Each structure stands twice: as C-alpha cells, then as structure tokens.
Length: 277
Ligand code: ATP
Image (tube, rainbow, N blue to C red; front, side, top):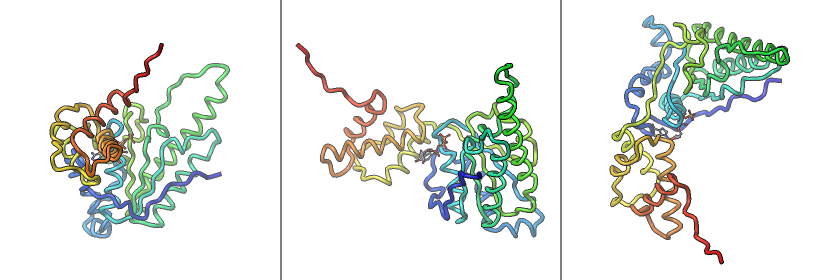
C-alpha cells in the first residue's frame, strides 16, 4: 500500500508576479530558481546544492503560493503532498511514500518537492502515553519515527539527487523535531510574515488583475482598514466582491460591492428580517 501519491504539476503556471507583500522572502528564494534552471553551473562552480528550505509562517500568507512560484519560474515539475498524508499506523507505509516521492522527483529533475504541514510528519516526541494506549502509541510513534528517519536519509543523500529542491511548510515550527532543523537538512528557514498595509495593497492589486474591477475603487482604503487580513482572505474578498457585483447586475466591481463583501466576510451574510406575530 503506497497511496496516496504526490500531486504533480508539470508546470504550476504561478510566477513571482503573483506573489505580493513578502518581497524579502521572494528575494531569498530567487537563488533556488537560479539553481533549478542550471544545477550543472552550481556544480561546476563548486557551490553546494541547497538541501531543504523551510517556509514558516501563519496560514494563508502565501507559503504554498511562493513554493509553486519557484517551480513556475524555473519551469520545472512540482510534487506536492501534505505532511498528514505520510501519517499511517501501519509501519513502513509513511517511509515508503517518502521514498516514492523523492524517487519520482529525482527521475524528473530538476524538480521541486513541496510538503505542506510538515509538522504532521516531523513532530517531536511528546512522551505521553498510558497503560491502555501504550501499544497503539508505540506503534504510531514507531511509524512516525521511521517516516521521519526516511525523510532525513533522503535529505542527507541530496548530493546524489542534484537538481531537486525540497521545500517544507509549517505554521508550527515549535513542534518540529530538532533533527530536521540540524544544518544540512533544512539549510534555510524563511519566514513568511503576514502582510502590513503596503503588502495588503500589493496583494489586492495582484488579485484585482484577475477580476473586472472599476478603476474608481480605492483599494488603498481597504489595505489601510483591514489589519490582520492575510493574502488568502484578501483574495477571497475580491472573489466575493465579484459575486456581489454579478448579483447586482454591475458590469464591473464597484466600491459598494467591495464594502458589502467586507461585511460578509467580517460578520457573515446579512439576514433577512422576518417579523413574527
Ligand atoms: P496554509 O498554511 O493554510 O497552507 P499558505 O501560507 O500556504 O497557507 P497559500 O495557500 O499560499 O497560503 O494562500 C492561499 C491563497 O491566498 C493563494 O493561492 C493566493 O490566492 C492568496 N495569497 C496568499 N498569500 C498571498 C500573497 N502573499 N500574495 C498574493 N496572494 C496571496
């Protein structure tokens, strides 16, 4: 049993222009694109290939998006799995999936492997178990450790798999097993921060290109007035505004449509009052 397999995108079609508000991270990640485009050059120059890169930050701020953009910019296949897909009680299944994932990515190198929620497969041991759960706990722990060991082996053996970049993403760095964070495994940790006002405006502009927006809409007022909104929520805002505009028969999205969408995403859809009695 070695299902499920990684989802593969021959080309993600995502590029850095689709990512906004996290310029520092993007700058650092450009080097991976250069490497993927020409791994032989790095080899010739005696530059050690990067092993793994950990993207860390809160949900919805663009970790998956930026990982896809790296593959998209380099024009290489993107192998994606979630950490939870490696977690099985049957011993050996998770590690077989890891082996399979790296094998497939190496066959099609240069390529990118992306494991979201990597904390699910690489959690440090908790040491909490009782008499009754002892057996199950041990089986699950043993399986998780075997899986994690396999991941470490694959990362350590990356010199032989030149041209493959491993990206992991987490919003719970504190849960990760320290073995994974040792030098030579995740060479780089890149923080993907929630956007500030300028970042929110840039994200809104990126997503405004994908819908029909009236030029009269003042996006900067939303960027200013929606602190704490992530890229995912801002993308959802403009999708919701487009739906409102269609419902109202507008030919493009107006400020009032975006206002309504903000209300809907903040407090939920308006209730129609029913008078009883
Ligand atoms: P999770 O931890 O929940 O997996 P994530 O950090 O991986 O979240 P993404 O899945 O990359 O977040 O973001 C979801 C969607 O939100 C993206 O596909 C994109 O449409 C939008 N988005 C998020 N961040 C950004 C950003 N920085 N720039 C542009 N769009 C963004």
